[in-house]
Length: 586
Image 1 (cartoon, helix red, strand yellow):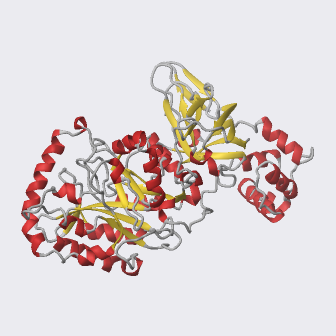
Image 2 (image 1 turned 45 degrees about the vertical axis):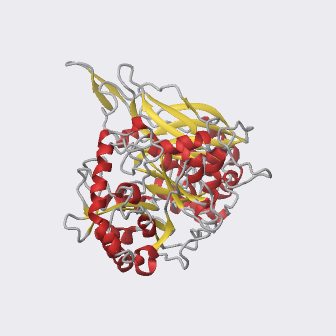
């Protein structure tokens, strides 16, 4: 019983009632229990096969399910009976551990194709604990990202104040540095805690050749045989994730590209930022350049003059460093068409800002998709995202971008989509790109996400009910005066033709809302579709309160009646909150 104060003298009392099984669950139980009051393991197996689509299940698997349900609900009943009542059956269906909507921990895709055939879970400025301007640099966010399954870690490496060691920090900001060696040791310790597949370290390098040589020594000593060192200077095709299991891969610009930046009169024509940075500046509109960024370029020139003589005297000192770079980064000169040119005898990684990607998606769709069929494209957030916010990841994925780099310490709807994509394939951090992004037609045509295609598949969803909020939240968290009025939003993120959002009606004054509403989503490209689910609490006078969310890859949804666990704003799973939903594909 919950009490809510109305004024000084009066209170309203509400009882938290447990909602019973929905009609569909009762009908399924009656059908498969053949009108009886108990369902046997064999009857459950038939239900799992015919309704849930679990065609690989045996009678022993069904018996295990029965035992697990009885163990959690009736500590003594498991010794006296081996059948399920209607309430037991409902409990099983509403358990996100026993009846999840996707296989969260099962790698099932082909992992033997080249790296360029996969979307890869990628972080941006992985060492930052908060905003891009003044937060601390630390190995803690790197560890968190790796434990979540992130496979690409970015480190900005700079000389320390005495120029004899290497720090990781966001250059020319107020961020406090962390030692490179500390980050490398943490990567080694946690790299494969969530996935056995390779971790790529992208280095944004602002070092002299002397310090590059020092970094090479650090990398070799820290990772040893874990480092993937290619036999040839330039790869003609990337190895596969399967070949690179438990390997660390280094990706940055080779030092020779820095040496070539010298002009004919012996001086450097480009700033350190322009020659060393993995974040390109070309293609940026004048209105996107701030005064601070213009000042940055001036200070870079000063650093360049300082290091110029030293670089010329020691051009070969970083040879060991160059040898360890497995994935070469670099941008050829010219416009977008030149930059996206596919070279027949080598593969490389290219970095573009989110604005440049959007520009390329407008005018160079074919070149963009063809480039990502063989090479690796990395997209990073625009420089004005000081608060570590993120951008729309689907623009990159629709064009085959492998590394859509996100500020993992940020959160919001864009991050929820990122989490949803990489729940695919057992959460291993590598998701095989759909064939449509790899196919080339007889006339050289490739996939264009803006083309209107026929509906390939229709997803039907029924939202039955929700539960668990009264266990995870305080009684007055949503409303001081009454129980919450929850409603559920469901929709699709994907190609433009598939994107839509729908919602149920609010259920007033109820901690365990029962909606029983159906929605239909025609999908033209189901391979790239993500199912978005959000629950909010309706507030007539103020902004609606957030009550949980999740995002799931449509291609991995298991049909039938499923328990869908919800997460908080940051993507951390709530302890008890879940929805009971049904998924059917037509």
